[in-house]
Length: 228
Image 1: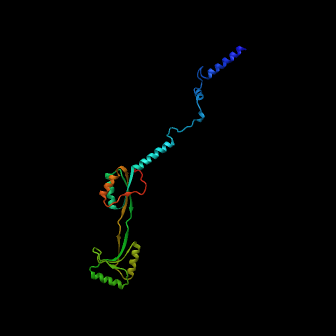
Image 2: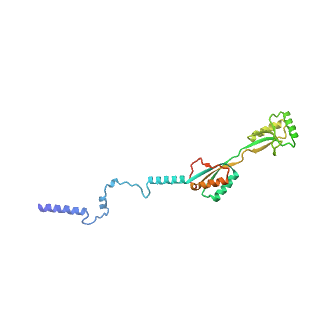
Image 3: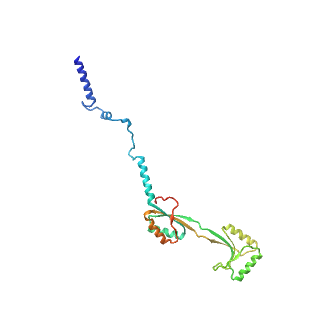
């Protein structure tokens, strides 16, 4: 009986030694590694060869703030087209870091119905008397010096259609010498938005004051983005 108990203990010790690897490695080299893992079911994969999303968002926000603070925008409003073209050339030549965006503003025009200038004041007075006889209520003789001196103005209109309608009415009453002329009350103009590095903006403003002394640089209405 004692021999049987001793033999049973010996077998258990040999089995324990074998399971612990003291009698040689298992046929599966990963079996011991699996046994040695601690809380394997609680392991969570954070990322696969890429930075965490929070880090990416933080870096993107930092770059956006950097681009925003590094850029400036100067607005030049209502400049004559000739001045705009001249400054765009100067900007491309001496300030390549800045980019200009042009916004064209259509000039306003009016339409003048008139009788061409008379050769003398006497002729102008006679023509005025004829108009009164024809029942033309509104007119005046131009007295200012210049190419239109002694012309007879019959009306100023904001559209060609209204001026044409007035001219047809005058001709129906017997005023055959009346004409229509387009007058530009305000020439074609444009605005410039100039985007570029904030570090150079003050020097550019000084150059603007020299090149366009009548301009009044201001701030852009929309948020500035990095110039491409």
